[in-house]
Image 1 (tube, one colour):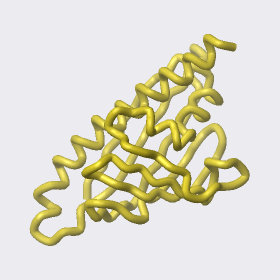
Image 2 (cartoon, rainbow, N blue to C red; image 1 turned 90 degrees about the vertical axis):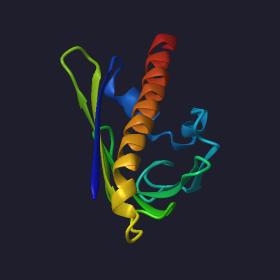
Image 3 (spheres, rainbow, N blue to C red; image 1 turned 45 degrees about the horizontal axis):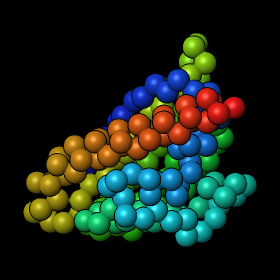
Image 4 (tube, rainbow, N blue to C red; image 1 turned 135 degrees about the horizontal axis):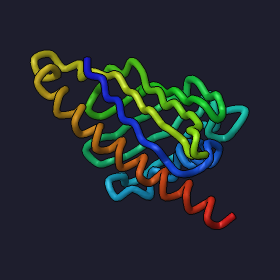
Length: 152
């Protein structure tokens, strides 16, 4: 099993950052994503608890289910189907206000590649790739959250 943990500080209010992160379809704005679709709406919000999204990155395809949605502090998800196959144990994104009025994000994911003889070899590479992807996603979140603030 591999653990990816990425931290980022965003100079925007926690509600704006949470909104930008949980806007699942906005993942399609990333150049590495072919499409991002909300397959099933969640509750009490569209992107909330029980929402299912599919993200197509070409080589990597994921179907994720939102398993916890505590606005604006935490969102958890689990990858329920993927290509290549994965054993995803945890996806957690935590949000906390900082003293400057910005938001601290900690994104944690625990996964394995359940392919005998191959998984243990490729898992570290996937961990590094996911770290890069998470940083790209959080950079996009920061751009959208800070743009929202400058428009208001």
